[in-house]
Amino acid sequence: MSKYGYRVVLGLLVVFFTNTVFAYTSTNIYTPNGSRVTVRIYDELPASELAELEAEVSADWPGAVIISPATARYNCHSFAFYKHYSTNTYWLNDPRKYWEDGSYVKLPSGRAIDILEVLDPIVYWENDTIMHAALWNGDKPSNDWTAVSKWARYPLMLHHWLYTPYVFETDADVDDWNVIPGVKVFGYRLAQ
Image (cartoon, rainbow, N blue to C red):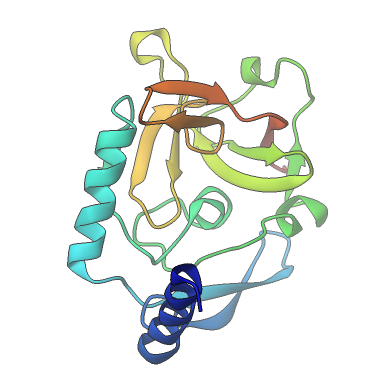
């Protein structure tokens, strides 16, 4: 067996026997219009791993600000559409039900940035796949429009609305930043 094959088998055995990183239970939450949405409740990562995630994001994304520590408890979609607090404990994989049931409405394309209001969710799509969600912050520090979003298991971040790993890719070796092809961003608003 190749060296690569041994690594894959070893990795699968570690995941199988430890199962702590990926352990979760499922439960349901509800959209403002009452549609049921299945979410996950993940076990928290060890403190040492959380500290590593915070150090990594600080080094790789110096233009973003950590506003709440790293956690495996909730993700960007849950933060943007369900509960806008770092005490959130739900991991929501797909927020579509929030606009499919009319709880949120999609803002007109084009210059949606001009009509976004504080706490409007913004959703980042790559081709037809939802990649990320954030809350519009509306502040203009240094004339940059900002958003607040949870970066997977990384911290809750304050950042320019386009300065995220979901819009840009970087090659740390050459310090080169590139926009990921096919990324589009749309705004949403809680329906009245």
